[in-house]
Length: 379
Image 1 (cartoon, rainbow, N blue to C red):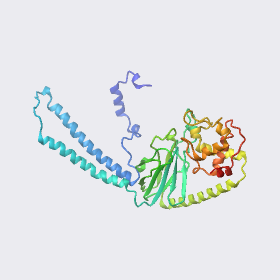
Image 2: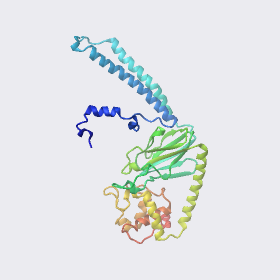
Image 3: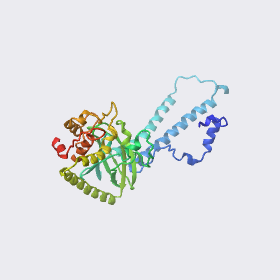
């Protein structure tokens, strides 16, 4: 109910009630930028507060002077207006004082900007590539790379969903980025399709990911922890579904994770090679393809295959999906319009499985199976 519908509570009374409310009621009303956890974020925060104090001092002096003038020299007090055209002293003052203020701001600001853009002498380089709508992380020189997808189940994100949301709703991923603490990590940021922006507030890092360009930034987090962020550039319909999750480990724990990840990648590559040689049945491919579809395709084409009219075509009843198998394979491999190429994103088994699933779901009962060998031949 609107508080002002209660005639017993006037507008002044409402503001008095706010002032007398417990401080805990405003605990979540953060009025300032976060300090952050990295060396550069604290540098940025310090610069912000330094300039804020200068701005506040200017405001006090200017508005204090205006208020004093209004009260002291008001007409009702019998004051007569002065008559003059200019004052050399005043003109010199209002030129010199702003110049001094700008210099006092420019020197520390330039020093901070220099540090922000100095990504040299890094201990670790990570290539970050934005996709619609996921991130790919590649540890340069380490032989480790993986995609990071939204982990929140799609049924929770659907309009009108009554499913209870978990604590990490829209902020959790299946493969978080892992970096070591107390090490300088350089990020090389680009994009595969449209402009994205990699942003982690606690790191003081926000950098555009632009197709065809590589932007650089860096971070040095002194203590282990868990941090989240998001794409900060409107990159399409599911812009809000590509979160960032970063886990900072001690150097020892990070090295153990990296070694484990290398072994896991090797096992996955070996398993993919073995799976490609396996004699797959239609049922097995459909079952596996449903998992691949939910992770990589359902966000655009919807879980029911009906797509979004005018944006993403329906797969249900599509002539290409139900009739032209070769064209279907070529689109998944090479991409089309807003759809990215999955050639480098998925292995032959995953691509074969998802195509088979699409051709045998939602009433598309073609009975046709696409094998990993078919995908390898089409490449």
